[in-house]
Length: 315
Image (cartoon, rainbow, N blue to C red; front, side, top):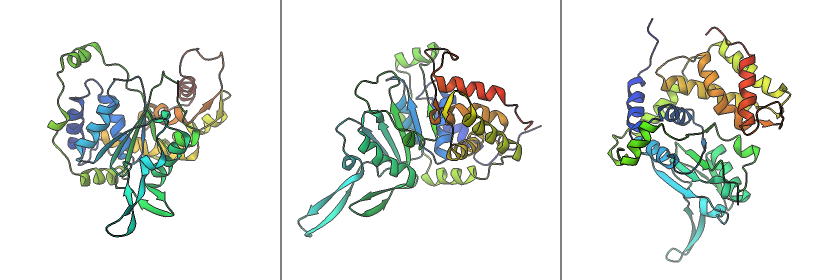
């Protein structure tokens, strides 16, 4: 029996083929990142330097002919360096707002946890409201507006950990990891396609895909499955703070987007099972316990325990 597809199926698969030529062996991770973009969310990539975080961000922007901006976050970065400043124009004898780098389609916030809390909070409004406030005025950001933030998972010297409210604004947290040997050999040889060689899709196509995402069918059984997972995070004995209703909405939207990327017009329980760790783990405040293996991500272990304890619906 053939699975129902949608009109963007071939376009999305061609897009992933193109993206994978500059990020070899990372099709699954690229599918997650594209799903995050289609779900109108923001992406946090936590990994060691040099595994392709910037390449992923720039590639996604370039494929849709979107404006891309990279900001290196540092401890002395000010909110005005991100949002913009008011300048005096002598010729016109007035003041005008000079927009900062946040006014873009795809913003790479590199090493976001190195910025001070005031600058992090300035980005918070932009991510949540798609707007910024300056001198009592509100300025709308471009549509689409997609933040890809990175942080080094190993180096905590001179960093300001993201608070729970900031983490909750990210739809997914993703780890790229090192490539397999056969792909890394190609990277070493420099056999990667240039991003500039991509065939471009107009931004209107991205907006149409986002509209289509909202039409992806999610059955009542899967909605109840999402609720059971979220509710279990709030009652697990190793969790201090569980996933909020916003997190449940994030999992729902992510599943729709992932189904779209996979070429389906409906969600499956496997979509929820696969995406739940990406959407929920960074939203959990877990207790440290010897019950779980030391040296690993406690939140992922708690989520694995939760997911294994809840029966999947039939479909």
